[in-house]
Length: 213
Image (cartoon, rainbow, N blue to C red; front, side):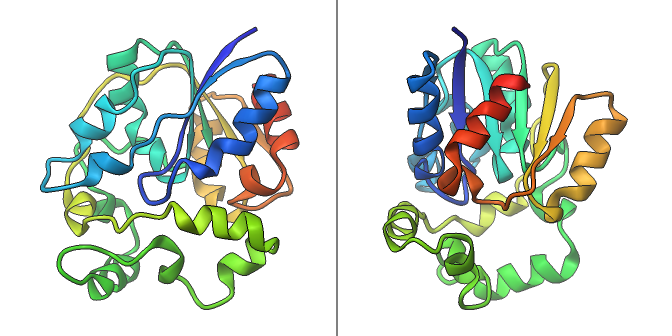
C-alpha cells in the first residue's frame, strides 16, 4: 500500500493528524506524522528548518498553513505528489502576511507579546474551537499541542521551489478561493461537507478521501 506523510500546520501541532494516521494504518498504509513544533524555536529564518523537519518520502499531505511548505519539503524529500487539505497554496517570494487580509495581519500583530503569538485558538472568538471540537477529550488533546508561533514567521518570504503534482481536498468554506485556484490549475479537487478540523472529528472520511486522491 502507499505511504503518506501527514504534515500539520506550523500554527498548531501534530495532534491534528494522529487519528487520520491511525485510520490509514488500519487500512494497510505506511504513515509518518513529523512534528514541526521545535522548528519554530529561537530566531529565524524558519522556512528552512520547517522543511528539514520532514525527512520521510511519500505522498505529502498538508493541512492549513502547511500548504506553503510543500515545494520546499518536496525538494528535500523527493515527494512525487501532494494533497492539500483545507490548506494555503504555496506563495513563493511572499510572506504569510503578504497573502493575508490586512485587517487579519494587523490583528495578529496586535495579539503578539514578546515577539510571539498566543496559541492558535486564542486568535478567534470564544467558543470557536468548542464548536469545531465538541468532545472535551479531543479538544484537550488538540489544545495541548498548540505552540506560540513567532511573529517573524509571518513576515518571512517563502522560498521558491518547484511544486510536485498536487490535488486539493476542501473541508470548509473558508478555503473556497484556494479550491477554485487549485481547480483552475487542473488539479483534482474534492469537497467534503465538513469543517477545518475534521481530521480530528471524522478521520475515517478524511482517510478515505486521501485514498481516492
